[in-house]
Length: 318
Image (cartoon, rainbow, N blue to C red; front, top):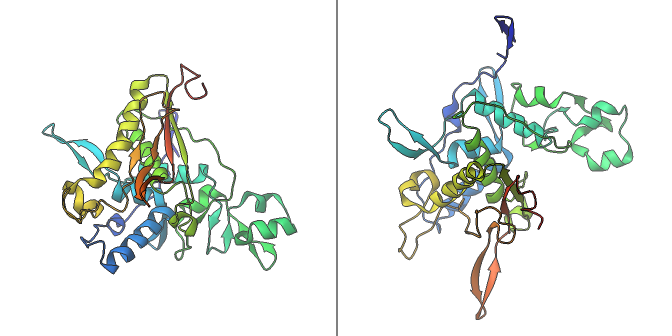
């Protein structure tokens, strides 16, 4: 922290190096190729649980949502010639800071393979009770709490080696971002929503997720529906881009619409419903129909996005 003209200016942003190590371009493999399943299983795991990269003299943790944002979310960009196109976003220090803030707000409590913990209970209790031992075994070693490190410090520090996936066992908090227009806040929010819909809100790549047993709900609203509608449209645009062959090199789309073996990106989800506020009765959701045994059956995880107008406060509840 420094002062300019007597005003404090925050300067302690994280330092980054070699971000190219986190960029991936999916191989164009036919969905029947065993390598296709192997590759995308690893990518799903990184998008959900995050990944680690070598930076300077240690290792930095990249949250799964930031990995997804960097590789599998599209934003609109206008170049010097005033041409607008969809591109992959950059991830500068501010995007990492936003991702770390979100991770802390969602309850980050340490890393699975770390000798330290950021579980708040470990900073509040001298000894773990039997219930704590059963509920938070990742924060315990030899019947004692691991040494406590505050979540904010633990997330941002360089570690001596990769420490596994992030644990999310602390209480959740509100997160407030105040910034200028054009700073990318809405794209970060849209990526967070799309991530929650595609991965059904999970923080662990496990059987419950793979079998479609999980679901998530998101609420977008504002006093001005035009602003929140713009955010919703960014979510939809990025989801639908995962069926567009123009982006096959980014999303791993096989073939072209109309081909017998055309396959959208594994990250694509069939969505139905409306994004027009209020949409309580017909939310934008992961739902589709398949024909089984001569009848149409509804499938999908039902992860959904509600859109409301906060001035009309009964939008969601009527």
